[in-house]
Length: 409
Image (cartoon, rainbow, N blue to C red; front, side):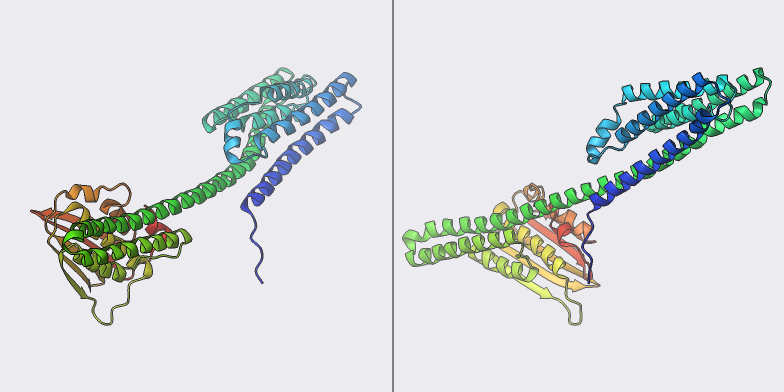
């Protein structure tokens, strides 16, 4: 039995909570343990213990507030907007508390405790900065901690090298721990943003595919309806019976257009090459265009995939529409054959008037179809020689494509 899918946003929220609790817990426990031992030591002056306890509580609160701002419970876009705004009030409060927890132990020659709070504050503040400024802040803090700790230790007669190295190491280690955990969160958040953008693009691609298919169907049907209506109008006086027959075909074409439109809306209709070649023969004949059709698929060759037949069918439909719309053709040729693993469709007509218009259609012309064939590993070319216009499309026999990619227009 399968398990229900887990929403990725829920998992991202769980990871955010894990990051917040782990980071805030580690920093808080470290601070409380070290400062708590100092506060509980009876050999330390009372004023220092009281001041350190208050500063520790303030620093813990400011740290938790800053981490909450850095890891907010909002979508990624709002997070990016808020990340560029430094929470100045909380930063100032945290810096003041960290300064107290640094100065008081340093005055009393506690070289192990004094760099802890400033290092913690530097590591949190650095997370709000872009990487170049972040590195500069940490490097400056490491150098300053080493100089300050080493100088005070040397003046008081203690080992300055250990004091300087310990202070610098404390700042560097806390910064690496904090930034490392938040880097993991930033990566996860970026991946989630990319997933959502991919989903939005997939929806837009499907909308473009639907618009292209609807345009192709309506444009083709309406072009043929206009042609037959014009023919019926010319025949109504000379041959009323044939004019009536043409109008019946117009009615049938309108019904077919409505049916095809509904099928596209419901996602059922798929154009195929065989259907479009047969349709082209009927339409071109109705326009008094002498059409020769040749098909040479050799025996034993695997049949084209459904998506390949659909794509070549779109090419056939577009080529037929261009013959009717952009030429004064009297003769046309359609040739489809499979050779050397390639399915090749060739459409030619005379009477070409403006080939540029057929290749630059808004989203559904030959240029767009050429991009679709390119994605599938095929080619589409067109050329005008004198008054002849040729369209040649080819696809590998084994080409496999997703419907969304083929239909994207």
